[in-house]
Amino acid sequence: MGRLDGKIALVTGASRGIGRAIALELAHAGASVSINYLSAEDEAQAVADEIAKFGGKTLLLQANVSDKDQVRGMVKQAVEHFGQLDILVNNAGITRDRSMRKLTDDDWTEVINTNLNSVYYCTTAAMQGMIDHKFGRIINISSYVGQAGNFGQANYAASKGGIIAFTKTAAIELAKYNITVNSIAPGFTLTEMLAKVPANVQDQIKAKIPMGRFGLPEEVAKAVAFLAADGDYITGQQININGGVYM
Image 1 (spheres, rainbow, N blue to C red):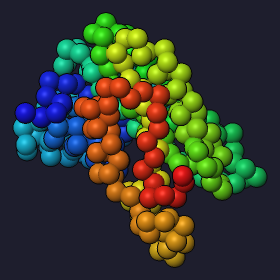
Image 2 (image 1 turned 45 degrees about the vertical axis):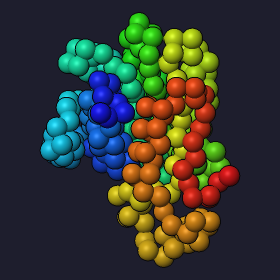
Image 3 (image 1 turned 90 degrees about the vertical axis):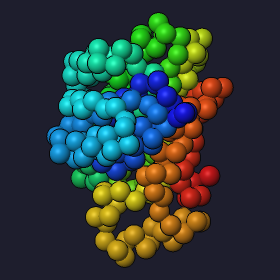
């Protein structure tokens, strides 16, 4: 039996990168997984197809997580399809990197809306059903940048730091309903986004990481599965998966 047999999960931004790895890991553990995506339908379908190969159940949900009405519709559709929602992973995120001298108002707003407001929208849409069932596992993907800051990422750092603060308050408010809320803060992780960084810059980044390498999406996904399956007495916490770049 899988550790998450019978559980229903929703992962935002699950068509690629860390979100894809999380969806696969939860499905391997036995959960049925709703795969949210914004525009990459082919990639989302590829994740669903991979899960289907080992008998997992999925649902594709196209929605812009920065739009509260679309989020509420997405959560409603997931619950109607599977009957409940046990695990919510708020993973969707974007970057619009510029120094503050060059950052535009749109750069700021788009990142805050997608990375931070979405966590509020998804959590509040999902939590009532979890309260009714007296069970829920909410896992928010933050970043070490939200802890340490990073040049050219004022908007991203603010959004990810906000996720950590939101996580703590949500954990306090929802604990009495057997709902845990935790955040994971990855460091530099080998995704498509990082792969686009020039090789010499990648080498400079790796030189700052005590473990001397980038993280893998699968390493983040394993921590998500742990919190979902075994983190019954863990709430309001951050798990840092960063190779020691921030301690």
